[in-house]
Image (cartoon, rainbow, N blue to C red):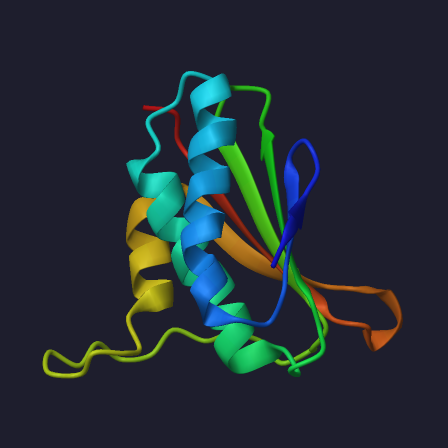
Length: 130
């Protein structure tokens, strides 16, 4: 189960909630008149990465959505580990390892910022309005 406020969703450590993440992104981007395909794809990848690689089973992952001054979508995913994500070499036969490559291809920019006191990190992405 996850809980959401206006533009923020706290995701419990459960891969089945990624569908809820996409519904949340569709709802928010729809209110802003934005196409939801790329935002849903990027949110799915970032949240899945946070759940898979970054979070202990009792840690929450938080997804936040906002707008930049020029109308682009600002997306960030916060988790409780300081481990930095890294883009892997693309393997044409592997079913995993393409998440950050997808994010990199579809976003204006993306990056990582650590939280104070080594309490975790935020991975952010900026998606152009379509």
